[in-house]
Length: 332
Image 1 (cartoon, one colour):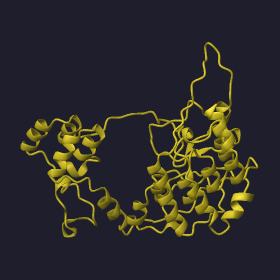
Image 2 (spheres, helix red, strand yellow):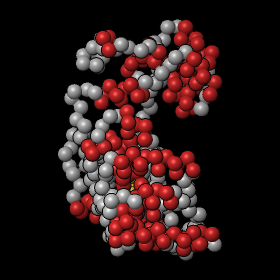
Image 3 (spheres, one colour):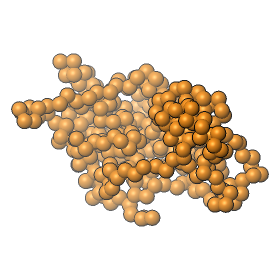
Image 4 (cartoon, one colour):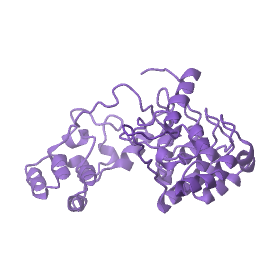
């Protein structure tokens, strides 16, 4: 695997050309649009189709489902917790399950049927088993962008994985973009969640939190594309989408940030764009004011709010106070 790391030139190019780059990966990697079908068992295909009778027929034909229905005791695990090729059964080699497929397809009746038959995706058991493996490095990061497992967990705005992963939050450190767990949890989900009519925000923000591989910022690959332009007959202006956070999303963000704050992550940390976590909160649509107050009440939080300047010379307070003018423009 390549050991290439981002250079200062790479970071400058990223800042100038990508207004909403994912914190976890580059959206412009070669081959990103390559699509290949996933190997599925017959039971998974039937579950995805929502065909209960077909599922029963395949199951009656003794299709293997042992990995989804049986709980293996620690004494039955071979080769240091990993199945040998001889012991592997088709269901254990699958990267999905009938439960996953029925959920993805929205087949409610099929899902109820599977759960009644004790199918279990075993996601948590799989991750905790990997976590406890003696060869696992708790400081392991992705190449180039330096993303830690905890960064992915925090990006989901769910505090539960932070507890059952059992990794110290201090092990996450910062990504190649200089973003700590506080930064990641404070990022807007996509560029549709920011004040796009505010030029200060457009110039300041270059990262988002989404982990959705289907989402792409290509229609607006740079801050210049977000600046107002005159409509024409051949190139009419399209309305820009706005996606404010729901009350449930606000609560999830607040709960996640409380866990990180309690771990003592430094609120003064600035990423390569000079932004603190407070900068990103100030740039996000309808962020809970209680979240901002949580940061301000931290050690040095008040100082950061008033004095920390990003590369555009803007403090979190300046961005927060400019929200009123942005709201007025959007209402007009």
